[in-house]
Length: 232
Image (cartoon, rainbow, N blue to C red):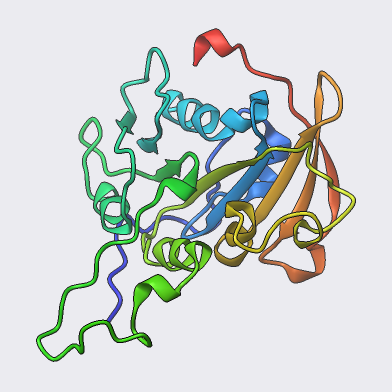
């Protein structure tokens, strides 16, 4: 039986973000794995940290896996700077107490940092079996299976980046390699959002993958004023 880790919460209860439009579109609730893709170097690329800090300031216990922790983390924010965390470590983080409470949200920035755990050797394994050789899997496949091994009841937010300005007029597979982390994200996160800033106050978002399949591919303009970077 698959072990599901973490507090069971109301499936309709969504985690807050600093931007109400994003809160509604991302649907960070219950067991959802949610993915957000932004351009490298943009302020939107820090969306994971921004959401983690915002939720923690609202009193929600949050675990943030990041290489760039906020300068002044709230007391309800648990930061894990493990360079290459595993699914087991993410699962275990849902059991840790933060100010006496179990986490209600897990955020991992640059989810491609996840490391697949080495399989336990079996006594009857044939050495160098080309069929079972994990090196035959692509990097993208290994990342996909690692993310699928994250099994928690609470919502989990994954982020990654792309180098060019996101082309929201076309599906990701039209302009990214199949093994790119953003492409892997579409296999494991529902919803997956691609975002790009269009004005000082708004961001355009493409719903690349969605739990409600009829919305996949739709574009939305979100009110999304940049946060003060000095506060995070």
